[in-house]
Length: 222
Image (cartoon, rainbow, N blue to C red; front, side, top):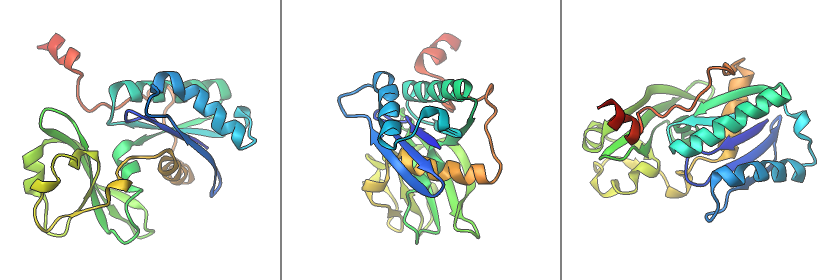
């Protein structure tokens, strides 16, 4: 299973076989995802002593996130799936982030900055098997409206908190910032779970999930 996490400015790649993480790598701060992703894929696969032709599935974050990063990731995943005739699994970015919450967290809000004083938010709760179940689907909400909706004891995480931490209600718990950024390793773990449940994305309809129009599209439609 090859996992491509490209929802942010700097993506990552991971290769997994069964329960074992074989290799991983990240795109450097000075690199651009569009130029660096394919070389990184080859580097990760080679370092594990695996051939691309051995892949059974490719997982990719489908959004929300960077418009450019999501386009590059999804296009690359679909190209590999087509050429290698393997499954492609699209996974919500906020679900990948929830995977990184500490094991003792019973429920969590994951948030990304949607610009314009808004957030992409979703809420997840641990199911009976300790896997995350979606309690509230991804939505766009005004910053203050989301802050006002938080309950006492809610756990929150994600880059959308960077400018909001000081405004949160006193009873909210902010998960350590080192766990906010979604990783390809976490994506691989979520994708493996989905594959075991029999899920596959429809190859032809898989597309980046932006959850809003770009500024250019909004201007065109206004």
